[in-house]
Length: 108
Image 1 (cartoon, helix red, strand yellow):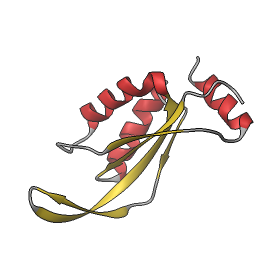
Image 2 (tube, rainbow, N blue to C red):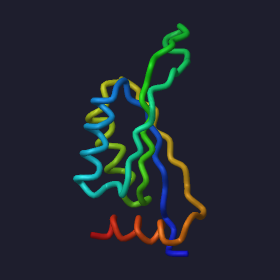
Image 3 (cartoon, rainbow, N blue to C red):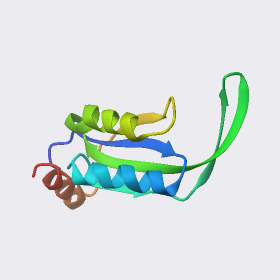
Image 4 (cartoon, rainbow, N blue to C red):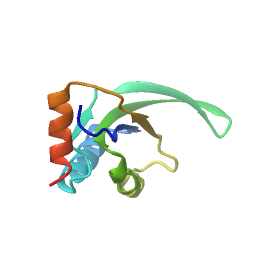
């Protein structure tokens, strides 16, 4: 398996247009090898002592650890929420050829 500092960054945005803007910016800046834009889903959470239910679009950002700070900054700049959810998952394995491709995409 190639050197593995691969991570998946998860976030949710309010709509498809915002999702596409962030995904395109990440790919253009070579901060992500791939961004999956999921189908709209319902998020339920408490905010300012009130239960909220919002339709949101999930993003799965496949990248490397050294890109994270710039990804976080880009999301915070482009995201309309006061407090966007941004969560990092470490990747501990996967299809070797895919991981090699991901590494190559982010080393250019």
